[in-house]
Length: 167
Image (cartoon, rainbow, N blue to C red; front, side, top):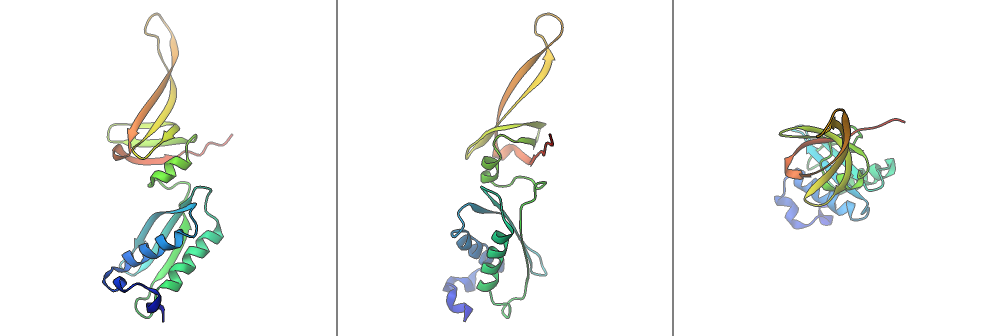
């Protein structure tokens, strides 16, 4: 009966492609959510990581889990399923994650350096980091505070983590 609910092209898709398509359709009902990561192990353990513009609730994870579970036939392929929110300690992987974290402190690793700074802006091509540092004066003795702004294309980012600051 479930096969009637699925489009005919599903028969040529891989198991992971089927799940990705089901998630994509399920997220249409929840436009503030987005997929961060999807993995399927050799033993068919499906792990889904979600994020949202306003966070992810337990109910959001339950809803997406049910959509996946109700769209696949376990007689055709048995699998285990885990749907969770992307953890606060997880690296940012999606442009939308950068956009939702504007104003927070990030630790960004590129090929050449690691920068810990405030995420000032994010668009579809790059992020802008801003920070200040104490540096020797160009003229005279002592140090002065220097403001830095750096645009970093996503293609140069190897890893970016949100730094949690407790006040």
